[in-house]
Length: 229
Image (cartoon, rainbow, N blue to C red):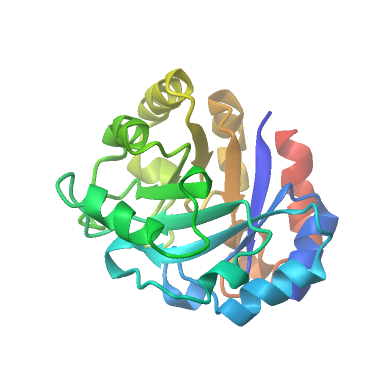
C-alpha cells in the first residue's frame, strides 16, 4: 500500500498534515534546499506536538555537506527515517559520504533514506537507475527519488514512467522501499497509481497556491490522501 508523506516546517503544519490524512510527517526547511534540514529545536518541537506513534522522518541536507552534530541524537528521538541527499556525489565518493553520515549519533543504518535526484545532471549526482544496486551494497532500505532544483518542473519531466517502473522493479527485488517526490501535482496521480511506490512525498502541492514556502493546507492534504488510497 502506498503511504502519503507530507513535508512540514513547524508543529502547526505537522498537526494540519496529520489531520488531513498524512501517514508520515516529514520535517524539513524549504529555505535550505531540496532536502533542507530544519533546526534541531524544530525537530524536537514537531515530535512533541504529535502522538507518540506518528511516523516521523527528517531531512538532513546533502551528504557531501553533512556535519556531525553530537546533539542530533536527541533531536531525532522518535524519528523513523533520516533522509540525506546525494547531490555533488559520484559512485566513487558515495560510500565514504554514507559512512560519514552514519558516524553521527542518532542516525542508524536501517533508518537512513538516500534521496537521489531525477534531474541528476543538474545536481552533479548519480543516475537514479544506479541507486538500487548502491542501496543494496550499502544496506540502505529506503530510496527517495526527488528533484534537486525547485523551478516548476516535476519528477515526470525528468524521468519517464517506463524508467520509474524499472526502478520500482529493481527496488522490490532487493527489498528496498521506494519513495517518489519532486514537485508532484494532481495530474501525476494516475501515473503514481500505476507505479505504486511505497511512499509519495509532497510539499508544494499541499501548500497554499502551490508554493512550497507557503503553509500546508488541510483540504489539499485530504484530497491527495483520498486520491491515492
